[in-house]
Image (tube, rainbow, N blue to C red; front, side, top):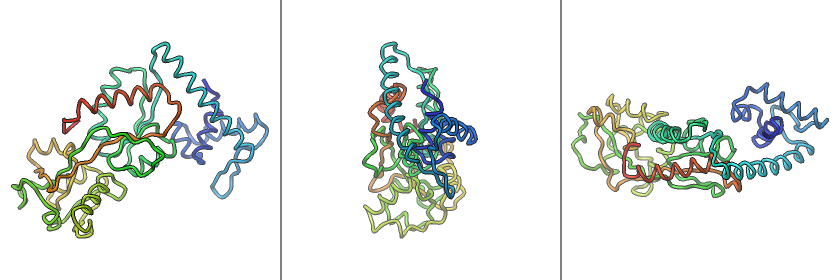
Length: 304
């Protein structure tokens, strides 16, 4: 309903990037540029200064941005009020999730949500925890679901459900018959870990800092970008690793991997993270409500 030119301008101004705005709005960059130019022609003034591949708001652009922010806040308040009265829940949301959550938790949750709310369109972006938090900070996504602590105190962080981490080894490994592994056991073998910025890696590092002098003593042999790659390397006998127990259910049933608890145990929360918005579209509130109930129902289930 709101002026499309103003929506596009507002997104570009918020992100200070035509490229990021195009990605957020699911538009081509030329289409974004065209909408902004149309608004500039309407006001007969430049709204952005473009220099050295960077853009900044002009004085006029800053003024338009301030009013646009008020307009969209009022628009959201109006939409929520009317939809609450009519009971209608529709619209679109962009969700971001770290790799482990996107692969092993969200498909089931979002599938059940879509069955209940068929008119809601959901876009999913996948990155590591660091990337997801950055997207929330930049308003590139409406809601993030992450697997590591969030340091930004200006964001709302709400625990969804606990996640248990275990060491994994191939069935023929010398430690395969053990019930638990300690830090001293882990440092004996080549260790396969996730990339920097991964929530799993951050949690493991914090754990090692709490039980020892830190992760430096680990014999890191590989850094991989997904749980599937880590599991494949462990199955191939290239080292051991620590992963979410939810990610290895299939391999445990097939007998290609053995999961061993850590001593002391290692658990972490999966958490929702979003901006502290005064007014949110109703579809966002409905998804959060549904997700809270879903996570509570599946709290004791290891694989969502």
